[in-house]
Amino acid sequence: MAEGKLCNKKPITTKEELKALMADRGGKLYYSEMNDLEVDQEALWSSIQKTNLSRFKTWLEICAHCGMCADSCFFYLANDKDPTQVPSYKIHTTLKEMIRKKGKVDNAFMQYTMDTAWSKCTCCNRCALYCPFGIDMGVMFSYIRGLCFSQGFVPWEMKIGSGMHRIYKAQMDVDTDDWVDTVEFEGEGLEEEYPGMTIPVDKENADILYTLNAREAKHYPEDISEAAILFNLAGENWTVPTEGWEETSLTMFAGDWEGCKMQVEHVYAAMDKLKPKRMVVTECGHAYRATILEGPYWAGLLSGKTPVDSIHYVEWVAEALRTGKLKLDPTKKIKEPVTLQDSCNYVRNGGLRDATREIMSYIAEDFREMTPNKDHNFCCGGGGGLNGIGRYHKQRNVGLKVKRDQILQTGAKFVIAPCHNCWDAIRDMEGIYHIGIKWSFLKPILLDMAIIPDQFKPKDDD
Image (cartoon, rainbow, N blue to C red; front, side, top):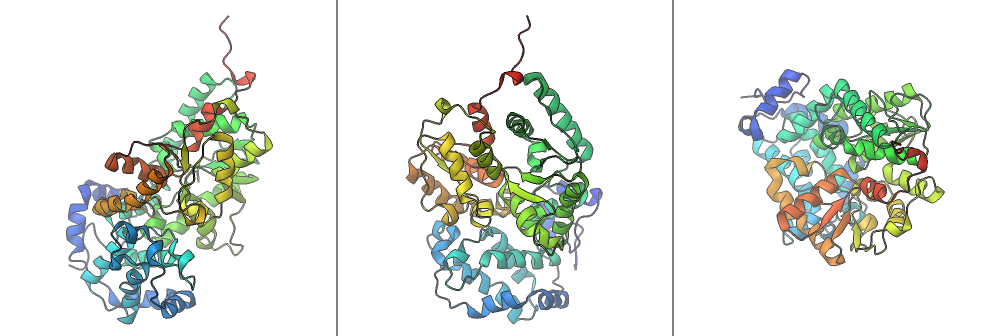
């Protein structure tokens, strides 16, 4: 069988296709069909020849097999230093072998490559810090994921995620009407609790365009209200867009590069339409990476920058606290020991290590760094889409041990995780290993400490 009904080389482009794929619980039929999926060797080799350019060629040639990348990888450490988990080994047995054979690889090889690319690497890019030649296996695995996607060898959940973005312009089935209804509902509740506060929609020339993770609209709408309260308290001139509000990109996790371009262009169109002074991304690491760091290149913007200045939520919070726009009650500082999860995507890859620590100085009396930390911190264990792939939950759960041990070493029982994937991974880690911790985004902590001006307090009935 060249291609199956569910597992094939075609991206999901219709609701009917998406529904059929989602109805296949756990991807049982999908993976069964994958066993018979034929590799289009000619197309694979043609793609490699067109895209495997100087950087990757150089990296593959200059790797000295020194093994210095080994200890940089949390999978290697979590799996008792299994040599097959060394980043360079994983690249040489997948991409380099694919090139050596000029694309003449079979189904078994492509499934091995898929399993390696999604269950043994989160594309956290930590290995690049320790390679003496600066070889970045995370970037190379992102490339490998694209080759796999083009051949239909992609995890079931990632194929669904790619389809969601192409159809709903979001990683979940939240269409424009659903989004607008959610914002209106949250806005009504906000005005009841805090008179005078609103959630402006499609306001032109605002100082801030706020964009989100679709999981907030679908499962955590209170996050929208929390962001709204804090923007209002800070006196910001802000808005959310009707279209282009979703920042995340499961297309990036899936290796669907055409889908990546489509996704960021939705957000950039909102910028062009509403003309804000800048855009603020919610507490999500990969949303920041996809839209701000990678997105301009997917969209063909030669400047390498988004249409308007764009920052992560931690940058806005640090600025608001520093300038006094957002005022906190110092007596409400967190008294218990607290530690911080550095998101790979906006700390190591985005350079925002200082913003989060500036925030901690305002909210915590006993802040304890993980070891290592900042750029050198380990991935949460669930990045790169790994949190959501059932086929690889066992591998993900083993990988979580490194983050578990980092947290335990701090002595803190409270972890602040200003990133959705990190928040999810730490939540799941507690459910698996029961180390007695709690975790939180920044917004609810800031709300608990925020000083509320009189104009936003409910008026007495009498």
